[in-house]
Amino acid sequence: MVSLSFSADAPAALDADALVFALSGAADDLTLTGPASALDAATGGALLGALRAVRAQAKVGTVTTLPPLPGIGAARLLAVGVGAETGLESLRRAAGAGVRAAGAGRVVVALAGDDAEADAVAEGALLGAYQFDTYRSEPRPSSSEVVVTGSAGSDARIHRATVVTEAIAWTRDHVNTPPGDLWPAMLADNAAALAGPHGIEVEILDEVALKAAAFGGILGVGAGSVRPPRLVRLAWRHPDATRTIAFVGKGITFDSGGLSIKPAKAMEWMKADMAGAAAVIAAISAIARLNLPINITAWAPLAENMPSGTATRPGDVLRMYGGKTVEVLNTDAEGRLVLGDALVRAGEEKPDAIVDVATLTGAQLVALGARVSAIMTNDDDFGAEVRRAADDAGEAMWPMPLPPELRASMDTDIADIANIGDRSGGMLVAGLFLAEFVPAGTPWVHLDIAGPSYNDGKPYGYTPSGGTGVAVRTLVRLAELSAT
Image (cartoon, rainbow, N blue to C red; front, side, top):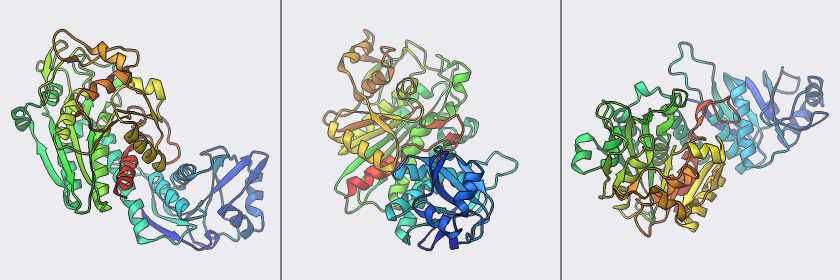
């Protein structure tokens, strides 16, 4: 656990194991601005001179380490390149990169000039301190304390930053956990353990209850595994709430593709296919801990998609919850099946709006890459609301259409709809499939987080390798905006 505090004291006067500050400008014209200019003044210009002497780089995310200098109390100095970037998100990223590079001990982060910047820096610093060492024989050094300068802070601001980043860490931990150690029942139990202490209603349907209620999509996807599926329902109720939003998260604890089996390489990170479920579970927990005056339900359909003699076959027809039938032409298009069941069930409670979060399609990676999630919606106003929440939170999301002409590609003579359609525009086809299960007249947003949910490259900014915890901040911010 990393402790957080704010300080209005001059950063040069604070004792620390490491001090993080920003470096901008071109290689031949390095600049220290904001809090960093005061650091340079405290050393009589020696700080900027030392950075120039070692040919420090101001490229975004680059970290240059210097030994202590007279006039500054920190044992090590870390200059984080910010290039020409400005804004709160650039500060989050710089703080994350600096704290990760700082390693163990007390880290002072001198990047903020006002309260809003300090809040962003605090969030980025805590996210950058994250490490997943559960399976390492020797844990890596990690920061124990982060001090953000430039603001006196408050207990409420410390609480918010801590709650949100702990929710993201919970999501990252679960995405990173090997699939052999995290199956549907285990994830359901962990959700209950996280949510229950914070006044959240918890309901878990096991395979017997799912069969009795005819959740054909969830049961069909989980049919090939010896580890049966679950449906988790969490509900946060506030006496002052005037709005109810349902969150629905895809929770495939491992996706082999089923009988339509994936190539071996494509399975290497399929432990991350439950990232949407983890995000909505963590988000509702954070919303409850922040005591936001809004009603939230979170639905997590959980299954393991495995090949076996009992697995759903291509050509089988599933009767979904609510009665709609689906011809399964590809068992690797399974996320939309569990989400279909959960969307119908969530809609029965008549929320004012629904947001689903899913690692749904490889087509998302093709269209938007590994760092930008897709937003699809049946209601432009609600879509804009979610987009604003994402922008405020610093999570990159881009609106994508739901072209009605693509719906016909899922027509079938056998059932009401097939689970795949045109390969071209596959992300949009998947969104159109989900739209079939959203109650008429209910504003709905679908977030495809397939690429951004898992970083299979090197860390950058506050983003580690592995699980990222994407969408948690957006959902919490949406709840905050909806509660005002």
